[in-house]
Image (tube, rainbow, N blue to C red; front, top):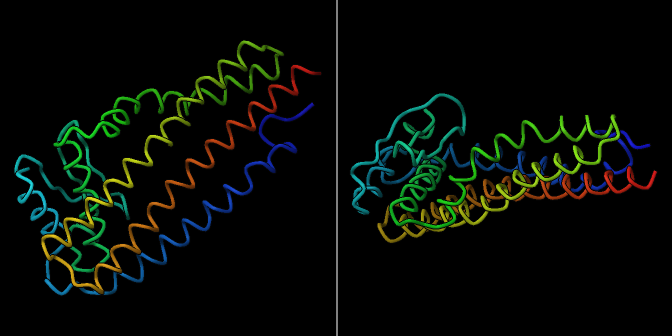
Length: 230
C-alpha cells in the first residue's frame, strides 16, 4: 500500500522540485542584481507604469503601493495595479521591468486578451480545488472509496489547468512589457537586457509551478491505479 503523500511515486515530482528551487534562487538573485542598477531615465516603477498606461489610454487604472516583496499584481475586478514598495518607489532596472510586466496585464485586460479572461474565471475553482482536492484524495484512499479518490483527482485537475493557462498570460504580459519599454524608449539597450533577465527569471517560476502541478496529477493517477489493483 502506498502512502498518498510520501511514497515511491514521489520520485516523479523530484525534477519539478529541483526546477522550482532553481527558479526561486534565480529570480531572487536576478532581481537582487538588477535592483541595484539605477535606471537612466530616473523614473520610478510607478511612473513607468503610469507612462505605459497613459500611452495605452488606460487612465482609469489606479496604481497603489502594497506591502511585501515581489507581491506585485493587477486586479482586473477593480482595475487596480498593486506594486510593492521596492517596485513602486524604486528607480532601478528591476523595478522598471516588474512594473512594466504588471502593466502588461492591465493592457491585456483592456484589449480583452482571452487567456487572461479565462484565467480570471478559473480563479475561484482553482482556489477551491487546491484546498479540497488533497483531503478528498486522502480520505478516499484510507476508506477505500474509489469515488472520493476520483473526485479528488478531478478537482485537482482544475488547479493543474489553472497553472497551465497562467503560462501564456504571463509570457504575453512580459512580451508586452518589453515591447512597450523599447517602443517608448524608456530603457537603454543595456537596461533592456536587464529587464529581459528579470522577466525571464520570473517566468521560470510559473513554468516550475505548472510542471509541479502536472507531475503531481500524474502521481495521483498512479497512486489511484495502484490502489485499484490491490
